[in-house]
Image (cartoon, rainbow, N blue to C red; front, side):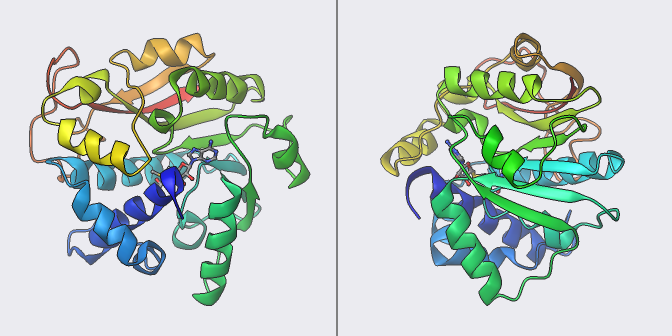
Length: 268
Ligand SMILES: C[S@@+](CC[C@H](N)C(=O)[O-])C[C@H]1O[C@@H](n2cnc3c(N)ncnc32)[C@H](O)[C@@H]1O
């Protein structure tokens, strides 16, 4: 796995590290095997204050969003990477979980999950595609129905896409969403791109061929311009985005010079 695909091994390693904690926010029994040595090496290489905590909080926040929207039987992990929610969450009967990601990653993951004898707890349907192009036909070919409300989870993706491409994807998701659909995920703050505290990490990501490309300090405006109405917006440390794991007070939204991340849930 190379370039941006390999970042999926980093976040799998982060979930494996979380799983080892006594006070873990979730358990991902497959994460260590999926991350492999390369994933743990990247986990060390990209370590920055707050990164480990944020990755754990992000996963748990989105687990909670999924649980809150259990009525939506059509769920799409947009850039699923090595996510194993299909195996580790309780899914209501009838849930169909689509996992979109790059074809090389999907192929590798399917082989590795088979070797690990992974058991899924919903109707899981992986789809290899390029999210910067038209992916709807491939998703529909796997059974996704545009007329049915969808829960879209966009975790750890948008800042790897060129800004215009990320906006285009958010617009496409909105355009293809039946009323009642929900989008949840994370957006990097622009401050994370310019803060002196992130420059080493950003350099390493560039060197490894998986640069972070953009961020925004006005996530609600970006989402609104792409057709999404924000229902929940949190920075780490706020109620509902801390789980006792964030060690600092939440940063005020207009903070300048410190790394910033946003978690959001939005409606069509
Ligand atoms: C940091 S990983 C996040 C994966 C997963 N959501 C998680 O949180 O562990 C970023 C993912 O985005 C995927 N990705 C990046 N650009 C993509 C594109 N143009 N089309 C499809 N997937 C893409 C990568 O393959 C990788 O799996």
